[in-house]
Length: 295
Image 1 (tube, rainbow, N blue to C red):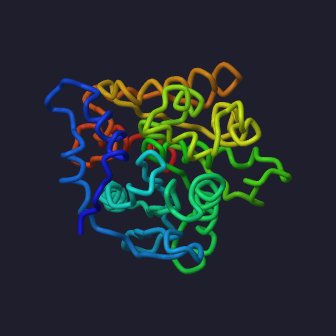
Image 2: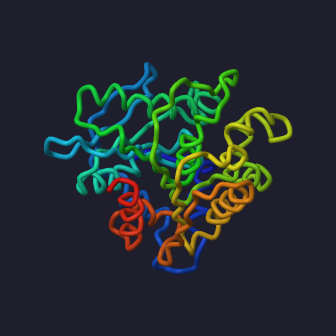
């Protein structure tokens, strides 16, 4: 059954789909038609809430297999779920990688937004330790990858070890990562707040502005946590004129304060959605980035 999307929430996807006049660039209609019927993995709960689950794909064979934790996007909003990332998760699995495709509570869900959204991502990622007791997963080779809002959450996951023990986002002993692949990351939260993107979703995610909630933004906005301590590849579409500037803003700010572990990749044939479409020409760029960490 196809998810029904509210008019207000569609602002994110419509803005992205209108980011280029190139008729070949993937639109929101293409997204909903082509990427909403992918093959799910094994549904496994990492918490007690109905949205605290992941879909695990494990390749055939003995393993142990390197792992991609994938975090879907959708402006952190409840209206958008795990379905649009299933084709990419399946394609990665077919390349011999285990994939842990995470669902989580979002803005509009009970318990979503700050801090629940962030804590779900942390708990879901760390749950790989439990999964590795049953499935052949190589926890020495784990990366986190995310798209759009999920790209922000992927970068934040890489930065989690920097959160102090007295902060309400602290979770002890975060699972070590060897890389982050951020696809069209909506990582510059301050700029997103200033521009009011997605019906001012940042203010709802954080329950306030950077001026009102500085202690929150300090450990949620990745550039403020830089250098985050893990290598990163940012893949951004040349035709994604709405969202690529936010990824560029993150990279610029993080490099300015000493994060040398950032690689920028500009996809010449991509808008906002091609980066999660394994049938697009951008797929090889995504796969190359993943393989650069999980060889």
